[in-house]
Amino acid sequence: QVQLVESGGGSVQAGGSLRLSCAASGRTISTYAMGWFRQAPGKERDFVAATMWSVGSPYYADSVKGRFTISRDNAKNTVYLQMNSLKPEDTALYYCAAKLGDYNLRLSEKYDYWGQGTQVTVSS
Image (cartoon, rainbow, N blue to C red; front, top):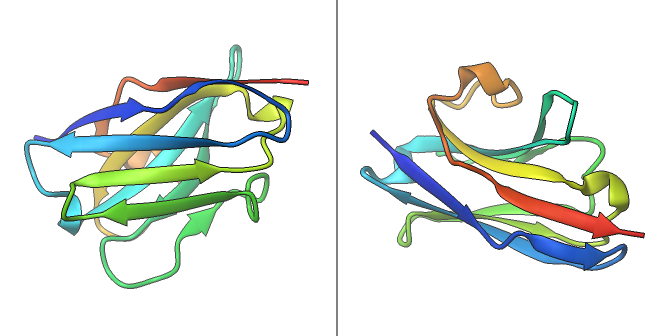
């Protein structure tokens, strides 16, 4: 079992930045692919970014490419999402997730473990 706890959400104005953290416990995340997803009210949960456990480039949704950066610190068992140039449409509940295997990283239904989410609100 892997327990995931997100933090770092908050309210910012458009153009601002936030850094989300996802702290894992129970097992080391070094052998898990890690992803970030988000869900706005009344909408489906959407893929944001993912990083493989093995060597490889991270994946990003087109809507966040160039603005968001996913990173991981296996020694701290933590994954981060640096969000810059935030827009009102980035407002959502952000979830961290973990899965075995470096494939299907954009598909939320393929992830094995989920955190409770952290709210990000961007005002115009």
